[in-house]
Structures are given as structure tokens and as C-alpha cells.
Image: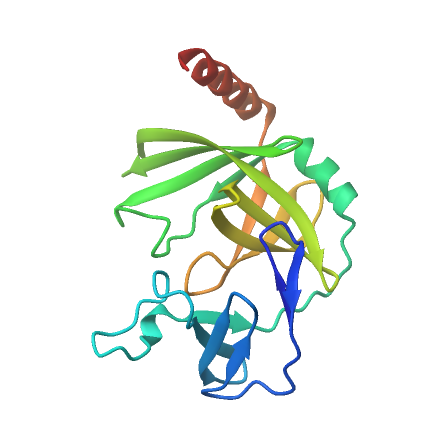
Length: 214
């Protein structure tokens, strides 16, 4: 088994002949106890990390705080350098699919406008209530594209100490990018769509205005 960081760099590896329920997978800084196992994957907690994997009051493992491991497969081989050119050449839109992390108010509809630069991603998030825009938020994050066992991933992060969601790139063309989102407990498929030039102008204007305000 191989342990990678959010930039796709190998941290550590360990030999484990069989993953079984209640077994432990040991790395130097992580001891993963397997709570459950099924055909889709398995659930673990890190016995050395009680902050992110908080136990129950009696000290036993809390299944609700477990991490889910699933089998990852890729049907096509993706050229990362070519993908970067495609990402950087356009502005993308994403109609946010609701989950426990993305929507503070179920009555709101959320749309994002996304621009990739060489080493950063700019995200403009618009919130709508009954079709009317109520508020907009702007943020910049670092990002990286990497491969693990020939599977391509997109990682977003504000810093090495604060990893952000990781997405699998399933496939792409000049108009759409299809991804698998692992940021919530329920894994979902999402898509980024290329926007028109009018939205490109508005997004660039918003970035300039935001920069001056700083």
C-alpha cells in the first residue's frame, strides 16, 4: 500500500497481504484500523489521530468519523500537460451539486465560475435565491494535477497544512471536463463546462476589482 500527499508525492509505503475487518494497516505516522469492509471498499480510523477521528465517550471507535477507501479505476489515459493547457485556456462553470459541505442553506442555488492559472485556481461563487443572486464570494487556491497508478487527480489546497478536496479526472474535451468528487461522504460525478466570452470578461473584471480592493 502506498501513502501519497495531496500533491501526488509518495510519502511512505507498507506491505499488507490482506485487508480484513478489525485489522490494522501501519505506516510510520498512521495506524489505520479497519472498521468495516465490503465489495466497494473499506472504512478506517487513524489510531494516531484522535483530532480528526474522534472516538466515542467510552473510548471506542466512532464509525461516523471513519475514512472511506474505495477502488479507483480509469478507463482512459490522460496526458497531464495537455490537460493543463485545456484548463488554462478557458473559463469554466460548475452548477454546484448539494452535499453536507457545499451548501449552507438548502434554499440556495450555487453556481461557480472557475479560472485556472499556472499554479493557482480562482473561484467566483454566486448564491441564488428563487432565481435572484443574493451574494458572491471570491477565493484563490493552489492546485496540482498528478497521477497515481495511471489515474489522474486534481487537488485543491490553501496550503500544505490545510489539504482541500481531491477530484479524479475521468475525461475531458474542449467544452467539458468530467470529474469524480470525493469531498463529501457520498461520492458524486460532476462536470465543468466552458463559458462564453461575456462571462470571461466579467470574471477578469471581478479579479481586477478584487485585487485593487486589497
